[in-house]
Image (cartoon, rainbow, N blue to C red):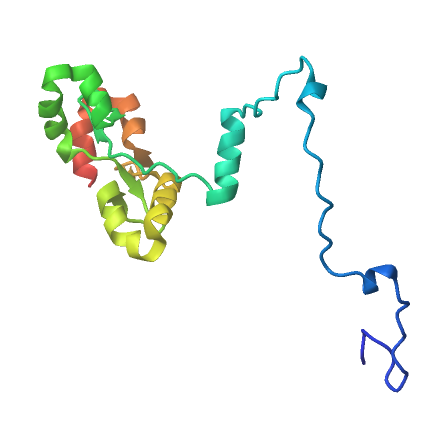
Amino acid sequence: PRKHGPPSGAPPKARPVTPADSAPPHRPRAPMAPQDRSAVGSQQARSPKKRSKKTAAKRASRDHGPAPLPLPVERRRARDGRLYTIKQFREFFGENSRERWDEAEQQPERRMGKNGIAYTMAGFRSTFLHALGEPGWAIEWNNLIQEHRMAPDGKWYTFEDLWELHGNATWTLWADLF
């Protein structure tokens, strides 16, 4: 059955003729008279409207798509058991920051992939860049949870969970759980 148009066999309905049908598709504007400067008097010419940063960001987003997301930054675990970026190492350790950063190379941040594998950021990027693209792997990385390992008690713990329970002994315990 037909849903649109006249029923089969019936002649199409005629559309009434309107003035727009006889007008050209584009009507040029009548020339405007130049403004009389003396009529402006003491009014100053209007300056262009200032746009806020928010408006400029919206316009840029509209014209060029959304602003690119910042890529994740590698973090390593310091002696206090917490994860820091190299910038944070520099701010805290100053001249010794490079030495401490290199020392922490054996303790990079790891996150659990959906496949159950704990990835470093670099390992995750190299594994999933081709499939997810540059922004895709970063978005996915940011959505992953911290690495967790099963302890002898049969429960799963993150490094931070074990640190709260065992303090500095966590380093040895964590390595044994790997």
